[in-house]
Image 1 (cartoon, helix red, strand yellow):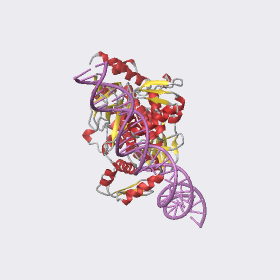
Image 2: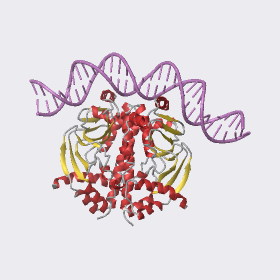
Image 3: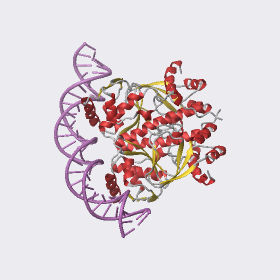
Image 4: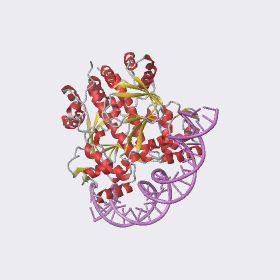
Length: 255
Length: 255
DNA sequence: CGCCTTCTTGAAGGATCTCAAGAAGGGTGG
DNA sequence: CCACCCTTCTTGAGATCCTTCAAGAAGGCG
């Protein structure tokens, strides 16, 4: 467990402190978490469906999908995780029946033992609360995905997803045009939006034709942010990015 | 705050202790939570969309829906809550951007102040953990709903929802036939499954015709549980009901 | 250079929606 | 206790969005 993992844990810590207030000592507890780095090739399921797990996975690089599937084997991606996300933090508290994880592109992950996370959470209640809060932001996203897949048409779904990713990557809202690397296939976009890859293809063509966004295999160029937001019926609030310092919470101090 | 609320809080406590281990003292902390009982008529939104809330709502009686909506005002129900559920427990840790709640039938709820829940969680880390875990079971359901709406056809969606509710109400799996009260309109079923009420109507007729289930305005009669489970591609694991005593968790004891 | 994955395109079919209107059900007031 | 009203359910027909199937083109990696 070399020190070289600290920058990656720092990224996760930044995520936590963007919404929660943690003391220096609590922050150190995160940075000192033991972990094992691992490279995963694209399309590999590195956390299998339905098994008990004893560690959580921090995404260091690449895009990771959480997914479920129906009996015919059709996949539905239920969450997309970007670097800095602890993709299955929920497993700390619910180690069985956890969801499966798949590398959507080539990825690097850090496996963090539950035991260490639990020990840290037990020792520092405010840390437990910060982790809990992080899980709830994840759940907010999940809620939005239900709305997305349940009550929006193809164009809206794809636009909404692109907006969400842009905001989570902190590349938006910039003025007008936005570029970011996003290494996923059209088939994976289809599995995330509940469509077929054929229809995602046509939908992306329409978004391009209408001057909203150009999506290629490796990157996204948003040509008109406001228009894409409108097309995706997107409202950034649920993502809880940009919480001002005075809005960050800490309720767990024992009295 | 009369003592008469204790039975209702006990129900919530039972929910917690079915998956988590709590000491006598911790259990008392739940039972002593202050709360205000309230009757809500059907179809009323009793927690509005997008506002900051300072209390969580425990469902005592009736069915409560959590929902989001798109810009056209089309609703998507993202969760259905039954008596004993704390419908927006997540708001304790994420008081802004909470989801809206609507009474699907006439309902009775208990409003529990965040302050009291926070104080209890701060004082008893194991309690915080139990609440966190409860939120994660809720998130598992949410995940399944994404799969349901994204990758299953109308018949499967409706069957899956009926199975889920039956298991959560602890009326299944009984042998073969099952009856339970379920006071929800076809329009609400449509909003939960991402369909139209017209199509839900035809789907229910098909389920009835095929001898799987009869759904009326007030109740559900499942004629063939196994067949409904197959039709809904339903796997009970994610609900984490029936966790055996030795499987219940308690990791938060400070060392 | 060659292979394998991914993207692209067309055409046809099907699941679900929309619109519309009548029937049934449940609650309420006279 | 009946009549009435409003919500919910039911049914039909036509429209549409999306899927399925298929096959060729393009792209990336060893």
